[in-house]
Length: 299
Ligand SMILES: Nc1ncnc2c1ncn2[C@@H]1O[C@H](COP(=O)(O)OP(=O)(O)OP(=O)(O)O)[C@@H](O)[C@H]1O
Ligand SMILES: [Mg+2]
Image (cartoon, rainbow, N blue to C red):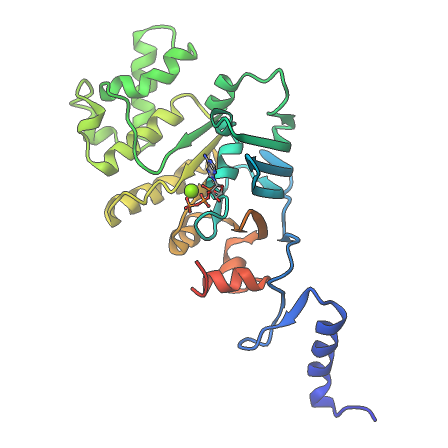
């Protein structure tokens, strides 16, 4: 009655897939994966000593449920990539992290989002300093119609971070250096930021963000308007910036996610499907939907 030894593994797998209806055996690899119907987040949602923590976050635009009960930690001094098909909620969850969604009338956010243990949605939280602590870099570089110098000095002025001109000069220079732009602009700081190339403008926006010493930098497809050379400069920069900051980056490029991030979160129709170490997500996903996406079957 006992099955021959060489069949034991197969029968165990078959049993697993009937007992736990949430799992299936992947035909091509033979691995057991969470099935497409399963919506529980798979993987390491939490990290030790997180910089930010999302707990049971739901986001609605009117009655559109854009983020569904998402819990996720953002680690210190590391990059987390948010990936997934268009419309899955990547920008929405990113905007929750510095309350940019507050600017959208029909948007409602519930659940908790903690920055260093404090809920940023508490009533007494002022969003202006919050957005300095959690800065954002957008898809399309958006320098202010001001000089290169004033683009970087803008935030420090608002937040009173420099006592005098010499201190401001130093802050502007340090920020432009960290953003890898100083050498290219040091002789034309009084010229308009909008006169720079796309890649330079994006680095200017990064300099502007880091000038106010944020703890977290949110980047929503920061390279999608850039050529491969400018993209590679920004990617190198992200790698350096993570020494000092926590970074969450939304990207449509899986190559970019692999290159720059240590953790990756895969979203699908508002659900956080899987999160884990980037190498694991791309080589050994545990959910069928993640596998579909990374192998190009979806999205
Ligand atoms: N301002 C808004 N008003 C109404 N619905 C919105 C708004 N912004 C986003 N949505 C909806 O919320 C869902 C998630 O959108 P979101 O922009 O977060 O997706 P995304 O993953 O960033 O997509 P993409 O890759 O195309 O940028 C989508 O269904 C979208 O239509
Ligand atoms: Mg988006």
